[in-house]
Image 1 (cartoon, one colour):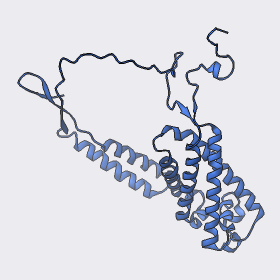
Image 2 (cartoon, helix red, strand yellow):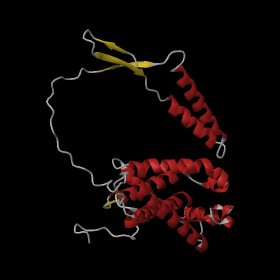
Image 3 (spheres, helix red, strand yellow):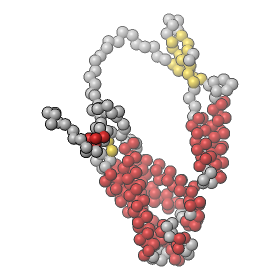
Image 4 (cartoon, helix red, strand yellow):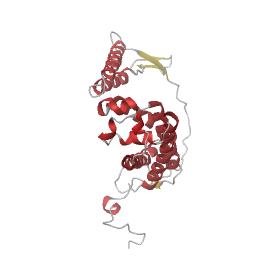
Length: 277
């Protein structure tokens, strides 16, 4: 690491390798290239372009000369009187356990409540979509059931617009199961981003899930992919995420028991009180 000095020999400038985002771009391109092997050739092509761009840009920043930047180092202040500041020690991490984040999590009940609330909002929007665009609220319900019922996979639009008790039960069970599962996942993941929980639940997660489903549904169920309205699908996913995120985010957190041993957490042993009882 090179540096320049002033007349007194104090280092004022330090040369360091310049920051670059090319390795991250190359890694993302490789990931998309392999993901396209099971999704679409377009995904592979985009991944290859990103990977080649990342590798070329990366090599150009180190060959034939390494890109470096000059960092200004401020001169240290001399004759500073030390000040003793009391420090409050963390209790989490005692008993030979390293503290792991997050220190507080949402209870499972919060995720279940968020999944139920988001599921109702999503179901209402789905029924509205069927009524507005296809003249029947049963259209979207039957379309969801068609993913698990081969008899409805090739049904006509008129058949999908009519009430089908079997399809209604199947769609309700599938929707309830997925809503509860996603709600539990929100309850687990939201404490990891405490500053912006609604952004993760209402925007990031729905867009990632929609993008994954959009790239694979043509392989999993081509008939459903041809009939699915992706605009309304994204809207329903965002509405579910925002609702579930608000319900989970407003729930009271509980502290983790990571500072206790496994025997105590599993109930095999009990915590002693101050008198050793």
